[in-house]
Amino acid sequence: MVEQDFPENPAFIRACAHVISFIESKPLPELRHLTFGFLSLLIENHELVSSVIAYLAGDRARLLDMRFEFIDEDEIYNISPEEINEARMGGGFIHPTTGKSVENFEHYIYIYFVPFGAEMDSQ
Image (cartoon, rainbow, N blue to C red; front, side, top):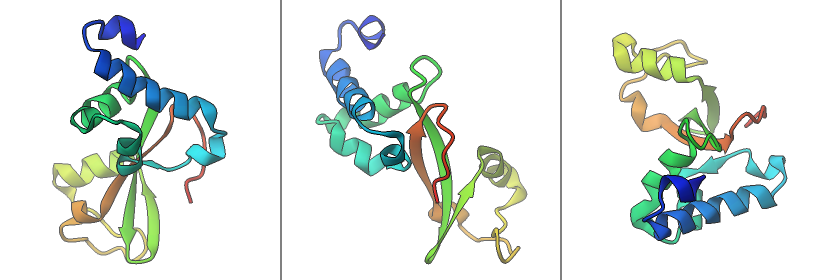
C-alpha cells in the first residue's frame, strides 16, 4: 500500500518498511508502548520521522494507534483523546488523582503508539 501511495518516494517507502517490519517481527506485549523517540530510531531518515508516523497512524494505513499519558513525577495515567480535546478547548486539565487543575498541562502529556486495534493495558 505504501508503494501505491508514494511511488515516487523510495526513502519514505523504506522508512515505512522499517517500522512495519519491526512491528511484524515482535509479539504484542513488546509493542505496548512505542514512543515517538523509539520510532524515530527505526526510521533512518530523520527528516521523514513525523510524516512516516503520521501516515502509519492515519486512516489509510491504520497500523499505529496514538495514545496519551499524563506523567506527574513517578505517576503515569492513561488519558483519552477526548480528555485531551476537552482540555485544549478550554476546559483545562484536571489531575486524575488530586482533582486540581494542572497548569501548563501539555508539558506533562506524552504521546505513544500501540499497534492499531490492539487492546492492551499500557501500565
